[in-house]
Length: 167
Image 1 (tube, rainbow, N blue to C red):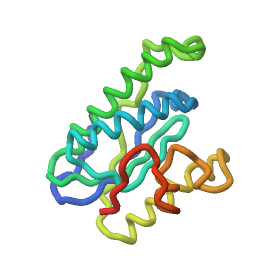
Image 2 (image 1 turned 90 degrees about the vertical axis):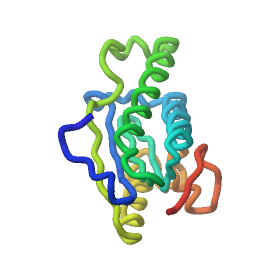
Image 3 (image 1 turned 30 degrees about the vertical axis):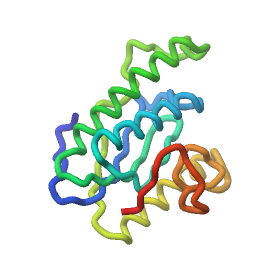
Image 4 (image 1 turned 180 degrees about the horizontal axis):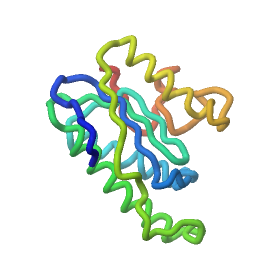
């Protein structure tokens, strides 16, 4: 996936970010975001992973993940991006938005960014960043107004479509 080193042997949580190819707004529509969320849920179960927090923006995704076993991050990310890519292309092919995007191009940028999170302070810092992303982008005024984020779960325990586990 990436030429940079991925440190997945320490048992740390991972703050990951990945973007749509050339920053296209392929996730502008809720159905596309639901696809990403559904495939995230599938991969969490498949890889025995825990999701600490997330946000799905119109052209990128942030997630805080933790794996019970070492060495799962690269495969997890590969599977999540591959499976969501196929489903997003299927969705776009059957929608009016197909004219806006060249579906021969990839859905995702090839690489993803990974940051090892080693303390509660850093976890909370990353969660705040994730939850404020839609506010900073001007999509909502309050993080809890954005449906495709774990902010509502942290604010009042409300379901966000995928299981959240603060590790």
